[in-house]
Image (cartoon, rainbow, N blue to C red; front, side, top):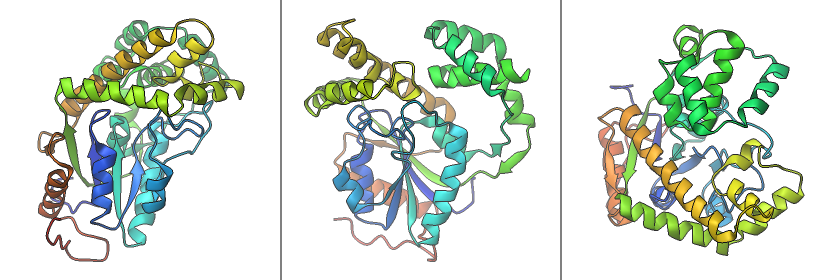
Length: 328
């Protein structure tokens, strides 16, 4: 919150904006531990398609919120909100700085807002409803969201299918919209105050980077990774497998489309997702949040992050202020 000393640093931005590169540059200057804010990188066995940070980077800097669950399980923003508070406390207890990095806006929002007590949902009815909604397209989900929770509709639609299904689930199974629960339910934990920066990329450059990333994923074994998941018994309706890249490649492997068609859909879906991310940052983050031009050299981006952190009153746990020194 404004006026309070930040307890964490966060780097956010759309897909292919260079968040990982900048976070590693920060890690070279400050004693940090990185907390991933990517809702897909929580899945085990899904490394290439989620562009998960390399083993080499993880050996250099401790990372959290990676490889937590299997592809047939769900990991909600609510669970992240509880996990991240524990990680932040543990990291600061070790005298290090929590560095949150990723593009899942709802994960960031769950950190910067209070945690509300989630309503209990009947598991059998929940699974039946999820099976029914799995057959709906995005437009139908959006229609239901607008009908059931008009207050939250715009936010849920910006969050994509997973956020829309969550909004529908709560409204139908509790009789009250999710916006009501956020407003009226008891608070379990206060928000955390952090210093957040957003990486900006021109649209044409973002599209170029996305195309290059998709090509790189294929070269690094995306098809083999998806085939391995299918052979392990995971299906296209499992939560992890609904992510961009996995569903399209699975359809190719099952003979429903050519590889060129699948990759074209992956590129288009990734571009749409990146645009939703940009829209979310524009409407959901305070206008005071600084933006950094991702086209600048990474050392210039690093200087902006360190100067902004210092100006916000940021310090390392147990110290009064952060000594930046000269930027290399």
